Amino acid sequence: MSKLTSDPYDKLAELEKTIQASTKAVRGKSKIGHDALLFLNTRYESFPVSIQHDPLISSNAKSVYNNLWIWAKTKQSNALATSLFPDYKWIMRAASISRGTLAACMTQLRLQRYITLYQKVRNENNQFVGNDYILNDEPIPISDTLSLDKDYIPYVKSHLKRLHRHQHVQMLAISAMKSIEQHVRNSDDPFSLQTQIERIETRQQANQIIQQRLFPEEVNPDLPQPKHYYGIPIEEYEALVSRVHKVNLEGAGLVHKVNEDQNQVHKVNADMNMAQKNQAQKVNSAQSLTDQAVHKVNADMNVEVNCSSSSYLYNTTTTDKAEFTFNDNDYQHSEVLIFPEFEFPNEKISCELCVLTLPREHQQPMLDELAGRMADKTKDKVRNPVTYLKRLIQIHQNGDMTFTSYSAQQAALRDPRVSTHKQPDKDKQLSIRELKSEIQHLDRLIQFGISQGQEQHLLIDQRDDKQKQLDELTLQQQKAG
View 1: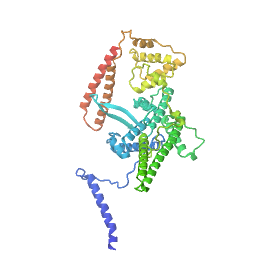
View 2: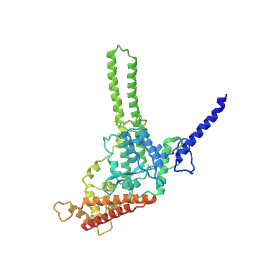
View 3: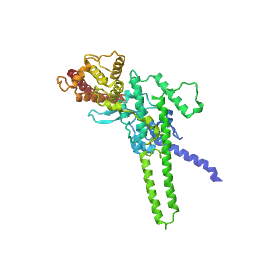
View 4: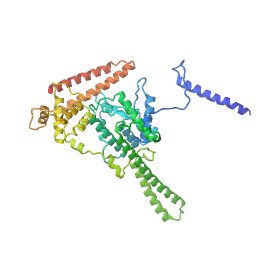
């Protein structure tokens, strides 16, 4: 009886001992006199709803995103909402996935614009320092992505291969490329950041689509039908979701059938008498073949299906695959076109998308017209080559376009018989581009140091030296014409 009455006191003493040990550990020797605040409950974290309900992203990719979210909020640097990117091994442990699956997940998140690669940073010796990523709570607008992620379109194009290892990645890349095409060709300025009102409207349309998919019985027929899902035209989105669901069912069925065959082999082996040696060898041979089949399926699907992926795609021969085949004949032709020198890759491919709307005989002259205007130092710099080209194309399509001397001059520069014209110094242009990137990096380091109350004389001197080099190279380029 006495033991029963002493139990509550023992439990209280144990709890008090835990509290005292915790507060002592957090206060240490350097925080004497400071109050302590304990949180002894389960840790909670909230995540954006949009990605949790996004049917185009696999469950593994969602897990990777959630762990990046936890890491960013836990490791952010003081008052600045930034942190070092976690090591891949940490993400693999946190999400319980392989390195290959993690790579596919990161690709999905960038293609769908939940992650933005802002820049690749280099130091004053032009050595690679690391990448700067932005974690978004929803797919950011295409226009914002083209401005921030300056290699986004080449990145998307690199995943359009017909024999891509990851069909899921390829499907997202095709969808992204079609969305980019529509955006670039229908926007006066494809790089103009989306307004707050436009962002709210996009978010509302996406939420309406999610609600209609998850709760069809509660759909309000009076609401106007949404036109796009974060930039993906609604027809493309619905077809892609349907395709994802269908292929997932086929993939799950295939793996289930192979696993059933394997289980049957194990059952036969368990029931066999040791005396039936020949029969055992036959069944073991069948088991070996089954194991090979299981291994092949798992390798092809990159362990996504067996990890309960919600939307992984694999090679299939179903008839509706043609819906997502990207026609790249025009892009193969564009490889023979000669483009001006652009500051960022997104600008080049955006101009490519625009000029491909013209008849082939007018495509190169139009690019030459743009290149000549960009090279004219007697006029103000063309700050937005894509918008300028779109304006030229519009004038041309209205029948009011007459090619000027710009076009003829650029064609003459390519004529091997003409030696009086100097070719642009590509090495100098590359140096100017790298100096600009280094100056931006130093500016960020200086601002960070100042916010921490640190002296930044050394970094400021380095930045000023880089600026002088940039000014000298720019002046030399202008004099060279």
